[in-house]
Length: 219
Image 1 (cartoon, rainbow, N blue to C red):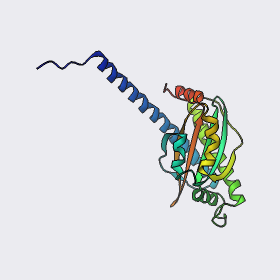
Image 2 (tube, rainbow, N blue to C red):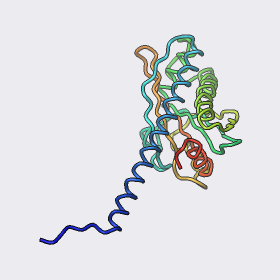
Image 3 (cartoon, helix red, strand yellow):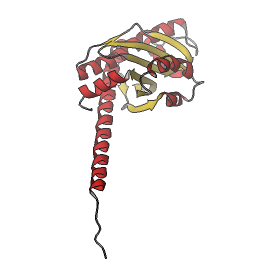
Image 4 (cartoon, rainbow, N blue to C red):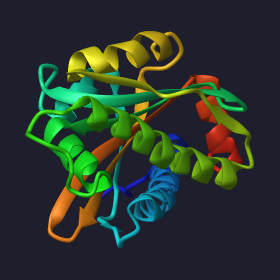
């Protein structure tokens, strides 16, 4: 019986696979940490706004292509509310906070202390959602800024009520010029038995994303 021999190239291949697996693991660990800290700060900000206890579920973190984004909302024709910000200074890109209509109505009703009328979103609801989206998205950006020691500015928020495909088309067109992936952080705020689910979508330009990973120790 001949000896079983492994060539140097086999060793190198296995070593490369192990290194890549470690990188992927570190990469996802860092992204989960961004999600956890950002969600914690966002929950604190929301609780301060309504002056009552707000809990949260452990956020789910994914990296998806733009083609996959609409699937998390139930397809491109699903009606949603989106609050969009431009990011500038050390990080160029966009951040988008998206809720389905039911969660948006629940969040508006929570902030308006039960005074939101009917099932449809009113003008007051929309104004309230713009403000809360601004505050809790800002909490995420602040977390990222603190973790990376990078200066990140956000623009005045843009609010849209439309189908998911239309809401996502603006950041997709702009950022697809340099990147085809986005960081998705699914966050569920819990007000008693009431769950309010939303998605924070961080879409930095590729150069900015690489710099964020470098600052966080993942190259």
